[in-house]
Amino acid sequence: MERPDLACPVPASPVPVTPSMQSRALAQLLMNGLRPIGDRLSITRNPALQMVREAFDGLGYTPLPRGTRVTAVADGEVRGVWVTGRQAVRENGVVLYLHGGGFISGSTRSHRHLVAALSAAAGRPAFLAHYRRAPEHPFPAAADDALAAYRWLLSSGYAPEEIVVMGDSAGGHLTAGLLADLSRRRLPMPSAAVMFSPFLDLTGAELDDRDAVRRDPFVPPRRARECGRSYAGDHALTHRRLNVLAASKRRWPPVLIQVGDTECLLGDSERLAESIRAAGGTCELQVWPGQVHVFPAFFRMLPEGRAAIRYVGEYVRATTTSAEVAA
Image (cartoon, rainbow, N blue to C red):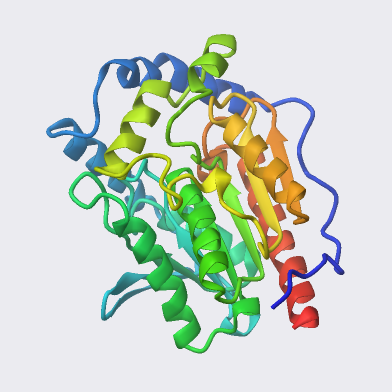
């Protein structure tokens, strides 16, 4: 399938000029609370690793939006949960969601509230994939699991133009890596991809300089590099499946990236957008003022989070319609 043009334009960007009071308050809370702990605490070894995992999973006990259905899946090597938001139907297609958590944490429990909101906005079920985590299961375990989940959707009867791949933070890396794997293997591409604050350059080469200019309220550069090394394991960070920024972007579908301007990881999003466009692809990069890492996950308290998710739904509907016309 050739990369479709956006024959059905999406609405104007919802990015505001200034952050809301709620966003400023959240950034300050994280800056004063979590960031100092993250600066000091190594998180890839126990007992801190287990504490981080339990904290992430605790988010999964947040009540899901009314009408959400969750169904566990165990089919061979593929594990995950179907999360179907209110009025979401299979006829509209499917989302494959790859969760974040620095490759070491996050799970099908921690992200189901965000995925439920995205499913409802896009009007389609979402498969929240389980993947093996570092340090117990370093690269290529997670990347292989992401590829297996995509192939499983194809074998389950979903046409590639019905699939949209999404991921946040480390899940953004897995999303970009999946597209690169599909390109190398000449497998059919999904209709679109959406990334929230993707963590792409595992070397963290730019993070300290950006953090020195504007301190990230949430992500300490030291911890990002620690997670990247933990995931890479014995492999060099220059391995072609790890260095997703250098991967060929040929045949990539349209990509939407949403990121906050407070993030030390902002440069990763900017470099990915530039490389996609240089390869002749389509990438919409939205830089939201005052927003923290993966701000759509805070949609219950942030008006920007809710607006971002609504836009993702509109983007998915438009790109999928274009892909189906092209097919």
